Length: 112
Ligand code: AMP
Ligand code: ZN
Image (cartoon, rainbow, N blue to C red; front, side, top):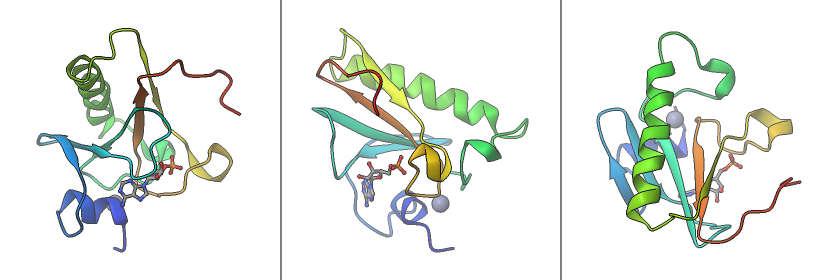
């Protein structure tokens, strides 16, 4: 399967990994939209939020625990955003589910 995030997870292409465990990997977004901008990604190739089900939802829960841990580690005590873009209208450009952890500035809402 030709998936850029699977290749990052398998260390076939380089990235700046900031966290990894048996379920998820987090790495720096190459086009950061905030002073802190990481992508938290399940190791399992789940295409989008539409493929989250009773077999993998605990991994998605782990994403949020890791988001909290990284936010603390990187000093985002004033707050942060975790966001998932689902499919074309949601703005998803990489079809391996991922969660943006963004912070270090006042995030705007609505994002547009
Ligand atoms: P989305 O639009 O939600 O699918 O987000 C995809 C994100 O992946 C974008 O913010 C890109 O900047 C980021 N991205 C694409 N390729 C890479 C890569 N090789 N390493 C790190 N981030 C990437
Ligand atoms: Zn993948």
